[in-house]
Structure formats: C-alpha cells, structure tokens
Length: 549
Image 1: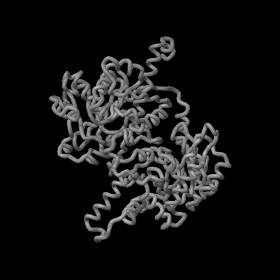
Image 2: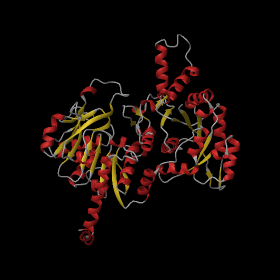
Image 3: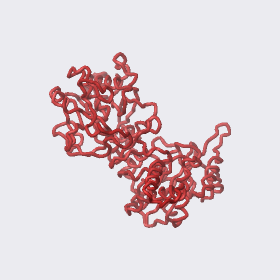
Image 4: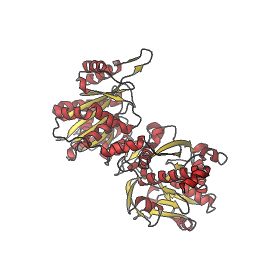
C-alpha cells in the first residue's frame, strides 16, 4: 500500500518546504523506494500560467503540458523523474471541478459546501497519484503557512486523511522557524510552539518538526521543542542554512530524517542510501577548476525565482565542466548602443532569457548583436531565440523594420509571427503551445553535435514562432535552421555559422536539466564560455599563451 507524507509550513513563508520535501524524497529514492512529490497551492488561480513572474516566480512546464508551480522543478531536478498535471493542484482547480460537477447535477441538488465537497475533492486529488500503484511513497507539500485562511481546507483534508488512514500509512512533517535574537544571543522556540499549537487546533498533529535555523540546535532546545510540540526528541530535525540547495539531502541524511520516516511508516527491508553520483556532483560543485562569468539578459531580474530553472541549469552545467558559473543579471531595458560595451564587455558568454511583451526587447536585440559581432558565446531561449532572428534580419539581411507581431502587429517584415493555431485563441490560460514536442536535428550542425542523436524531445511554452517565409534568405546569409518539428516544420533551433557558439532555441531546455542529467546545450554553452575565458587570458598574457601552445 502507498504511504503518504504531508509537509506543512509555519511561522513564515519561504522556509523551503519544497527543498525539504525534495531532499527527503531523494533520500528515500536512494534507498530503493519509488517516490514522487506533489504540490497543493492555496491560491485561486487555476494554474500559475497567467501569473506575473514578479508575483510567483517562473512557471514550470511538465512533459504533458501542465503549467505548474516552480517547486515541481525542484522535484524533477532532485529525483530525475518527470512530474505531470496531477502533481500540482490549486484551490482554483479544486473549486472549478466542484462547481462544474454541481452544474452537471452530480450532487443531486444537495447544498455544496467546503466540508465535505471541497475537502473530498482535495482528498481525491491527494490520493490520485498513489492510487496508480506506481509509488511506494507520495509526498505532498501544502503551500502557504498554517493559519492562512486560504490553507484551511487543505489542512482539514489532511486531518481527515490522518483520521481515515492507519497510523503507519500517513505522516506529517511541519517545517517551522527557530529565529535567533542577536540582542538576547538566544534561539527562540516560542514561534514554533505557537505554530504547532495552531496546527493541532485544526486537528493535525505533526509527527516530525523540521526546524529552519541559522544556528545549531543543542539537545536542550530539541528536548524543549519535543516536550511542547508532543513529538519525540529524535523527531526534532535541525535544518541549517546551506551554501547550496543540493547539500540539503546530505544534511538531512546526517540528521536521520529518512530513518525516522521509515520507522514511523513501518517500512522495513530498505537498502543503504546510494548517493555516489550526488556526492560526485557536490564535489565538482564545491571544488571547481575554473570560472566563467555569464551575462543573463532578462526582463524580470529583480526576482531571482523568475529564472529559477535557468540558474539551476547553470549549476548543473558548471559542475559537469568542473567550472564555477557566476551569473550576472543585466536588465535588458537599460542596454543601449552607447553602453553595451560597458555592460557586456566583461562576460564570457551571454544568455538572452525568455519573456513576454515589448518592454526591454530592444536591449535584448542590442545584446544579441554584440555577441554576434564579438564572437561571444551566445545562447537564446524562446524570446531570446526570436530576438536573435530579429537582430539578424535587421542587421545582416538589412530588413530594418523586422520584428515580431507580438510587439509590432503592423510590421512589414514579421520574421516572428503568431502560430497559425494560435490566431483564433482568445482565452489566455493554458492555451499556449505547451509540453514536450519532438525535434529533428540537421546532421553536421552545432545542435546535432551537442545532443549527439536525433530526434530529440523538449518542452515548449510559446505562441509566436519563426516565420518560415524568411527561412531561405536567413540560411543563405549563414543563419541556419538546425532543428525543426517533423510534423509542422516549425523552426525549433537556429544557429549561426562561422561563430564559435551561437544558438537559439524556441523551446525551454532549462526545464529538463537535472543533477544526474545536465541539459546538453547548457553544458556545451559553459564549455564554450570556458574556452572563451581561457583565450582572453592567453591574449592578455603572451607568456602564458606560449606555455599553453
């Protein structure tokens, strides 16, 4: 029978429930168990697809085309498995389902209420993945903070499941904060006590208390928390700040979190954790042999989570190249022809990031031109690829008004145009080209060299595409389409010939990069940036250059 673990949060948001859930899942997986994670979010949006990146961070897209919370990216990166539509559920989706059923007469005229109808739908969704029989353990992260009005139906659903299930089949981990007061020089447990009390008043009794802290918890503090929160002392887990999120599984291993969970769930006969690959990755991450500086040209740089998957892909690719990747955010809105050298001159590579809307696009185009002319390694993703096409059309093909119809519907040279199937779409939510699609790679191209095989499959999230009416003049001038969708002819990859590394992709490769399988383009991009950096050093130091020769 599938076992269920619920992770709740208290005191404050942003404590890292997703990282704790992913770290525990990794440890259990490393012991031979089949584990997956799901996220239940309390906001009323049906999904994050229409949310501003400043509001919620990036929108993560799954293989099956679900627009989901960014925590699902952590789940995939840690576990190296795909998630799906079923792994992320919002209050909006729950209510939408219940209301649709009420309109269809499913409740036979009964008054529809939060209890039992909303909580029953929440419970059904919580058990849905486990009912497939594919997993030994399903970990469910409950978004928000205990005490929030929005979270109450989810907490109530967990209470009901705790009551309905056998004790050994259901477990609750409560992540909380132990603040350190500098004036008193003390760690304070009172916020945790109140948080657990509030959770208990709602009928949910945590089995494990995970304590986020900046200072180590001594035995006396652990005993105090255990006493007031009604758990065993060994069930009080220290969650210290880490230099990298990828260190957290090993810290939780030291704390014995996985062993406590296995005991409480009565799971026997498990093997020792197999974390060799994970530790090798961390060694490369901690002890790099080189360093590159990458300029991330974006529109949402004020919020780091807006480009979360891209930043994590750089971590994976850096470790693969045994190279520290320093990412410097550059706001595209403030790049001009006058200051481009000043802003971009010190980088070893440029990544022009995805986005929507006209703000900052001219700065992105200027950045692309700088990379093209100066032979600087360049990587464009989605809108970044489209900006590369526009720059090439304007400055190489001399189509000065070339643009995307997203920004300029009246342009005479729409090198980027709305996809045909998108022209009749009026609803915004969940209507883009979403999820995994195949791509055929042209032999003897940079793209084929990077992947090493064809076809490939990558995830998409876009409405506009490269206009194939311009493909012939592009290729004649040296910008080739090295990857296309085999069914539609959609240009998926463009690359510039006679350039050390210049590639743009319509899809989002960052969404499939994991610790165990770093995304190939990111790995190759960092390798090219590393070579560019080494060449810069050798040019500055002729003596070193002769030694290298």
